[in-house]
Length: 296
Image (cartoon, rainbow, N blue to C red; front, side, top):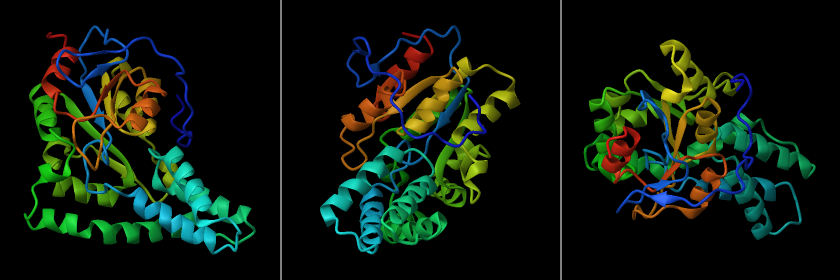
């Protein structure tokens, strides 16, 4: 894969899969058997929706904002038509850096004959509104009024702790702006697991991609992709891990409910780009890691 390419739009590459199976008495769905000769040595995590739930509900901020902006063009489309349009392309681009959704918004504004703001302006507008929604969550963590476990995908800390015990190197890559990723990683107490290996979106979005992070992991450690394991709830990290020859774990997290059942839309979407394993969260971390380390 050429990591100099910009992050690609979602494109289903797997139309049919054979029968899947579940590890006994777990929610771990095996789409493709793990047949590597060696266990994973490097593990890459996405952030929002994979580990962090601080930004849960973000589409409820982004989509209404886009509807307002598109209404202001003078279009005769109904609010419901604009909502459906915005929801469709927001979901199609979920997993990419936020700026890509704003690039698409600007295109839609111009398509309706109006002058669009720069995508970065729309991104800042969205971010300001999102901060209003989640300020109480961030403040509760900062003041110790909420425990990190309340705003993490279930059993994330147990999973990360066991991976560290197994002497695995952990990396985190997020499409959220890097300064906020670092801050929220600290608020959730995850910095002790990832250390300096935390990467987020940059103002010059062309200089960052999850593929570049993976390429760096492999080149700096002089290893092959088969030693890489990735977890994410977005298609970009699944697609990128697979393109480098790694094993991809889809976290089909139900961010609002946290009930241990997979989000079926995420499950189908991530299997569609080659996910090898699907989990709803990390509550079955022990049998999952025993399976990946061939200890069962």
